[in-house]
Amino acid sequence: MESIEDIQALFSGIQLADPSEHRWYIEPVPSLASSRILLSRGPHPGDYCLFIKGPLRSFGRLPSLASIEHKEDAKDAITGETFPALRISAPRIPQGNPAVTHIVYELIRQIGEDPEVDNASLIRRVVWILEILGRKGAPMSPENQRGLAAECLLLSQLLTRGREIGVGPEAVIDKWVRGRRDFFGGGIAIEVKATSYNVRRHHISSLGQLDKDDDSEKVFIYSVGLRHDPSTLRCLPDYLQAVEEQLAAPSGNPLPAAQEAFERNLASAGYDSSHEGLYRSGEGILQNTVLPPRLFRVEGLDRLTISSFKNDQLPSGVVSVSYDIEIFSEPLSLSAMNEILDSLMVDGA
Image 1 (cartoon, rainbow, N blue to C red):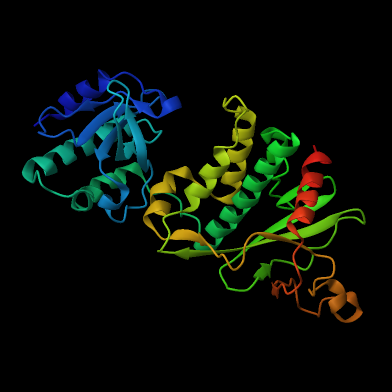
Image 2: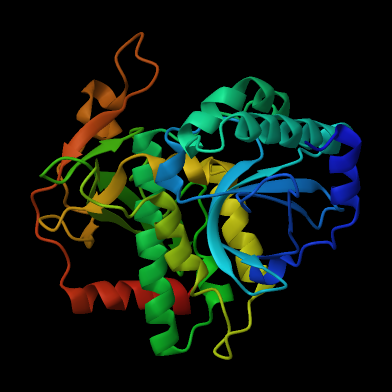
């Protein structure tokens, strides 16, 4: 069995990773009969990391720890082999690399004692030492996951439509403002709402959320049915990936400015890519075919406004008001919806 010093020497001799194509220069552990544990180094700058081969489901429920992420497409930079594996990376702290070295030592010890141990059992046996990586912040709630997935559905639709009318991804991503409005451009404001019900029932966070900022503004609700469901494997990272794949030039070259804007908005929504394994190991997010994505004009909807209260004032002692609204009106036709999306992108470009 390798000593701590032997493991450090193995890490030191590994070439730095090439993250542009998910390629890793890897070194198997000599004392293990199989290449189940692979050592590598990341690009920032030479952080130690290790791979435990296996599909995501083989690891069971992963602990909510920093620097743990499952990769379906890790690639050996030398052989070109692509394989699924759990990646454990050194945290960006002075003792990050020594921490990963000790984790590798414990994994080698456990597998040496029980070569047939399955991945889920292996993780349970070493979780005590994985704690040195540090705990993650909490992952997004199911409700917030559905909300972000809905925003990505509209963003994907805008990117597709943008290509048809000659608007590039950089201009489209700029309309995803995630501030006072979810999307805004050219006097068009769109609030994105996801519902897990079988009717278009949505939560409105304040009396003014759907109000126009000025007389020229037009406000719409983008409504879609989404629910967490074990019958689907499509989860939040897949909705994000559908957007990322469109953030490229016609030549296929990536657009760094668009990608950076996308990542900033993901962060503002509370998404942390280090939680990807947790999102993928839970229930997927299923689109409700009864409630496909549709656009509704806020004007004319039955909803609460300040004028709903006596003397246009909230009752004494009421600080704020939120409520649920159920939409019964007809959505815009698909052609009318495209006209609104075009106005948002073109007039706001």
